[in-house]
Length: 189
Image (tube, rainbow, N blue to C red; front, side):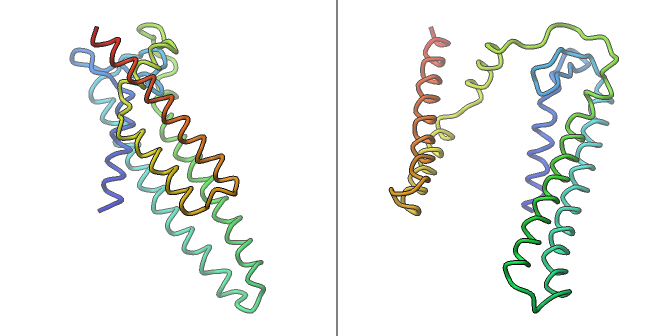
């Protein structure tokens, strides 16, 4: 259930790179690159390939992590617990690196396949990307940042490096809230 919802969310984020343009779509790498026209069939094929690759990555991650956590314990049950934790930590880091790399390759597959196609315009400017980000941001997300900062302070206390991190979260959330409020106000006028 969780994996299915997560997979659908990733598919939706992947498809955000494709904008409707009449009967066809315009592909923009990471939603900001120059637009490249693709057909609906091509878009659906890219999405199906992405979903299939993400499923493989998810299963590979699960199996590799289970194997990595079980094998050191079975091979050398009497070794120092610190060595086992080190081996498991390095292994999990390696597995995550490989999975993230494979995920990036799956995400960038349309850009690689379409790199020789004619572009239909210019990439989006930084100002336009900022505007789109502010439109998509919600005040609820900013409140979650404040709640996260409060939880960090409650659990870690005020006398640690976590205090600086929590303060950074609060400042970032407040600055973004002010930027969004100003943007919403200027858009209404």
